[in-house]
Image (cartoon, rainbow, N blue to C red; front, side, top):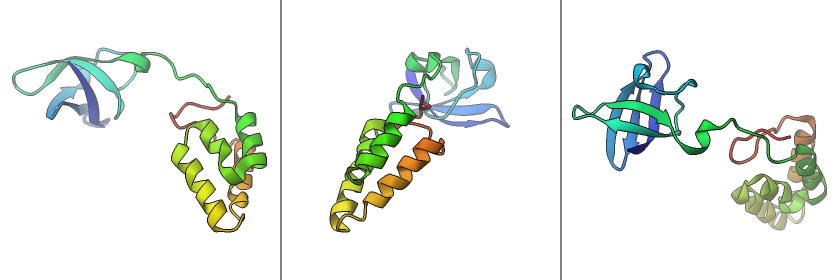
Length: 138
């Protein structure tokens, strides 16, 4: 079955998987992968009659290392030049924040440009370093 890790306790080494509307418990001994389980991962598992899960392992993109896709210099330039319309946020995949920046700029009479410039500087200095999917920036 395919499920979603809802919780995982590092100390107890146990977690819960949600599949449809059912929950299944698993222990780290049932984990079939080198990396540790993370909340939010999609997993493949074998459900047991007692509500536990065995042969638990990640599926899909979780098997690959996370690679940088977006460039922080491009995002910084967009923030500095077109920050008033949140273009850097759209580039990084934060669409709702981009829309919010447009609204703030419009409603404040243009003062929303400060938001974009500040974030452009943060991107340039490496203080903002992930896109919307949590991937690092190049």
